[in-house]
Image 1 (tube, rainbow, N blue to C red):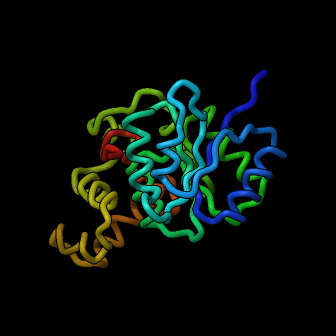
Image 2: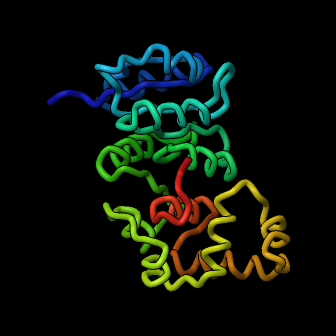
Length: 219
């Protein structure tokens, strides 16, 4: 049985080297190490692509956002897992919109790293503890339902769907309130109601739901 091939893009050499060794210890083949997105794309072999790319977000020359978008367009079979130093909700949301299939923090333990890789390989996404219950079931559906089906399946009304779309943007909750001509307290109510209905714990969970169900397409 052939090993799963993984490519790494991270500008921190010591961290990248340590991660490569860890991946080998976990039984994976590290096929490529790059210091930025441009180097990764330049060195990719179209006839021998890695199954997974572990992509740092903040890199010189070309960051993880641009590299992930290009990978999605040129090599859609390659699945990207974002690497983040911090649990930055906006960065994670943006990476998901660019096409990343999941994210892990750089200080994650080896068990979580392996779980993330295996989840992306087998299910297509890595959800972490932020995504639970009904959302995992819905995300794992092969055929994403239409907005009408989302309304029916999850009991969302038009205003909740409008809020969900805006939550996928880089707008703050206060800016969303202004856009919808509602008070910040009312927006907090929409957010909490959706957390409860979709059984998620964060804005990242909302975005994953929206992308996988066609409410908001990843870009």
